[in-house]
Amino acid sequence: DQTGAEKPHLFRWAVIIGAGVLATTLSQPAVLRLPFQNLLKNDLHVSRQVMAAFFAITPFAWNIKPLFGIISDSTPIFGTRRRHYLLIGSTCAAALWLIIGFVPRNYFAILIATTAMSSMLVVGSTIAGALMVEGGQRYGASGRLSSARYMVQNFCVLVGGPLGGFLAAKAFGLTAITGAAISFSIFPIAFFMLKEPHTSQKNSESIRKAKEQFFTLMKSGTLWAGAGMLFLVYFAPGFSTPLYYYQTDTLKFSPQFIGNLAFISGGVGLLGAALYATMCRKLSLRTMMYIAIVINAVFTLTYLFYTSATRAMFIEAQGGFVGTLAELAMMDMAVRATPKGCEGMGFSLMMSVRNTGLGVSDILGSRLIEHYHFTFFNLVWLNAGTTALVLIAVPFLPKILMDRSDSTPA
Image (cartoon, rainbow, N blue to C red):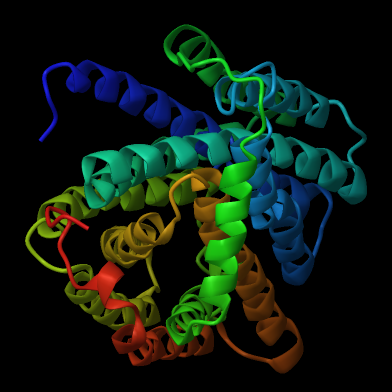
């Protein structure tokens, strides 16, 4: 349990983490997605595969988060490992958002500017993740902090859906200004609240330990079992972009209604995060993962009935709930598996697998429709089946990570 002296520090830490997650999540093009989709589809007239490629390429820096992590862990800037990275990252992200609003309206110009902006968001996200791991390991609260983090992320989806629908109907410059304001919002909080001891030396010991951890894990069969599970979860053929084309071309949904669907999904996702925060203290992570994977695979099949506005609202609601449970089980495991002393690098390594998988899966799903004559409903079956295969890998995950609840000491 935390002492009275520790609680104020933990609260301040939690505020900084929450603000960092909000600033680097709500300002992502993947969250403010509808203005970009509207611009690409209706103004630039790109295909499904090209649009999916845009949303896979622009967050490329998220796939190399471990690089940002190891730099932060080992190389202080202006004497700090976290504070100034957060301040500089938020300032650059805001400036690049404004640049996106002024570049020529062609695919490659927008692609390059958005990719550069996303790389600055990665800096802030890496620091927020490192602080979360430090706090989770120090207070034995990895599951609860993961739930809190995901509640902030789902709040971003909750707000980002309707906000994106509103912005999609306006001039794109307004989207750029909004994104800049959101990404800069962490600056004053970090400036006044993030107090970090000054250091002038590189943390070479943490790099040495990280290398030792890496080579040890590379020789471990349990690592490859875990990697196989992550591969199955995040590299399964996805239908994010195909769903958008299905919503607009077949069901004739407006951008605002699509944004409202994201609001519903995010709102119910908050309930899923709250439920996980309770269940993770009573059940082992292995049990939670079994539950999450099974219900996620089963409820994915409800997209087979995605044929009207009313059904879409119910399906998006359950998708937000079960998707949150599955995602949190993965995040909980990632926090527990991150080596101490290299929190930024370790957690970022986990997230890079996730982010790469999401981008590749969307491109794969779009390609199956455009070149192999799959239908949207074929993709639903395929995604549900590959998700269910994840159950094969769960028994092989390390006991030290999986067979305790969030309240059980490591």
